[in-house]
Length: 428
Image (cartoon, rainbow, N blue to C red; front, top):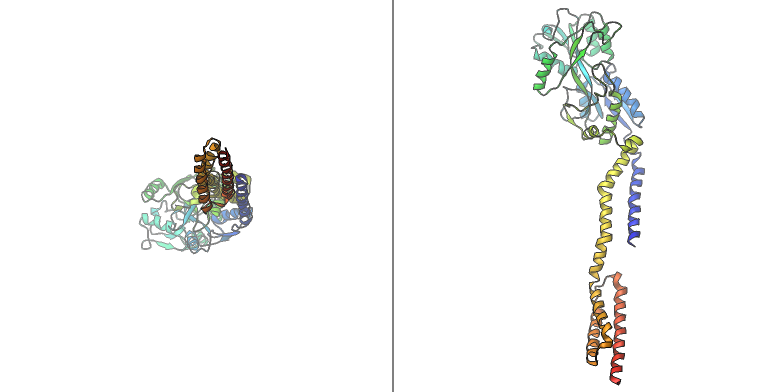
């Protein structure tokens, strides 16, 4: 009986995960949005790769163009998009970081031969990008460090394309641009003969200064001819300051965050112009609070289910495993303990009266042949009293009723035997 009960419980518990799979398999999110700056940006190009990878997992990725990192974050906070690429140094505290995905050098281009370093921009016409761009706050911070502001220099709020044209036509003297090397605008800027790239010779000093303020920038090298070997660009090796591009979210679920990180791994793990293979994505020195799913991902990037099943099937199986380990297994243990220990113990407890009566009856029954007439009459009265007590008992559990009536029948039979024994002894 116990085995049957356990089997039924096992079957029910087995059916629950199967039912869960059927309900959960198509219940995942079908489309998401990502903010990517403009179409000329490296973010946009990377996002197109994300779109192709996510399509394989049954998800449509919509690319939402913005003016830059600042506007992208505003859209995140308004829940107009699900994810965004942003520049470290422009982040808003409420957002959650998934990972760093690339280095983004701070490119300062100029067309004036008198410009050699950041300080020499003082008094010049400088484009620092438009409102909503991530370039603008970083450019302002760097300029402020060397005492350059609206009062001693002319700062222009041009878009990247406008700044490029203005620089090429000598309407401005310099422009800030922050991007990974695969940006189309960067390629244009590097190839224009009269436009030069600033060499951050004091890059390490700037880095140390920012570290003291808990802001993290990196120093990277662009070696001579490294950008374009055929056209020998740049002519000399340049040292550059670089920030990092981050993939961030606001309220995305653990599952979709994990999927985005797995896609990021496929796209960003390859060697780049300024870093080795498998440098990115990473969670090193994130300037935002890290999403809990990101923490788990970097502890365990894959598991048995993800290696052998599609992503969504793997997530469902992982959920089932967690449910089994957290809830079903403890329940089975409790049920097993209840059936194998508690119920038998309860039966023993509820049979204590029956066992006591049995013990009394058996003691009398085994000694009938050895009793004299006086003792037989005494035992007869004892049994009659016991029978009255038993028949007056009304708290016997249903499962013991058969034994309850068997005891009464046994007492009646013993009383008959005693009467016969008394009759025999009296007739002698």
